Length: 234
Ligand code: 5RP
Image (tube, rainbow, N blue to C red; front, side, top):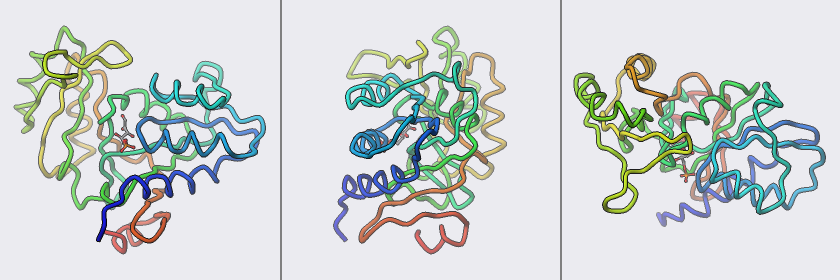
């Protein structure tokens, strides 16, 4: 099987763009799949749609193609949020935040009446943690202190870097600890345990926030709405 992941992302993003209808307020997540979505949206004849971006990166991409932007302050309920993910399991639990934007992405997911996740098929996993670490956004002041707590929770934290020496800084001015947990048995419990540590802003485990997953794969695009659909795809 040839792994043409980029074309799978483009195909899935095209499908997701079709969900955006005139007059909607739509939350936009972050990442390369979302950039493909934004490019596709710019070619569509949609009227009166306002997009609420979750990161500086996607805000710039949306501005570049002329999409109309708003803020969560102006629109506290979103009709739809579309976002990417790093891992998705059969219960639609996810790991997000490889792009460092998961704190705001969780907010626009919570604020939306419907959340649709757009991925290529390499992102579907049997257990969260199989491939990606859990990104944990922390106050810079508390980073080394929190590392010990994350080790106590069974994780292996690593401070995210940008290049060889520079520490990665989020859009919110914080650091990220990428924490490898291998196979996560109870995502909901771990999400809460991590967020209870003082100094943690938000972690990248998303539970119960997804209505459907659009998957680009070899030979086409499938919309997954149930565990049964998921198991047919993995
Ligand atoms: C950013 C995210 C992204 O949605 C996730 O990393 C997927 O990115 P990509 O579409 O580039 O594979 O959570 O914080």
